[in-house]
Image (cartoon, rainbow, N blue to C red; front, side, top):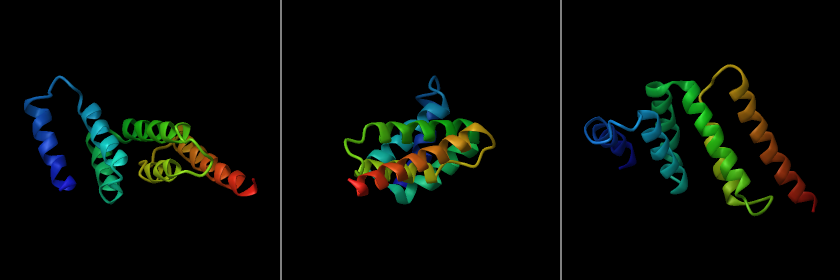
Length: 119
């Protein structure tokens, strides 16, 4: 169902939400997928987002979304960290700083889990 919803969302964007950028609509769609843990659809949705709006914009938003999940985690080992990891796995390959930020966030998640294991 969620795979088909993307097409419906694009039609709604074209005819009803034209004032809102496609990037913003795609970001809201991906955020809902993450919040509802539809990870089986997430990578395809992220790839389509990158193809339609640009890999750099999509990557930046995905890294930011993952950082929000990590910062909201109430513990060093928590399901929100796994959500963030899954989001980061969907970041499209881009050159430069964003790729480094995604890897740094993955490293931080790993460090949190290792620290939790030590305590």
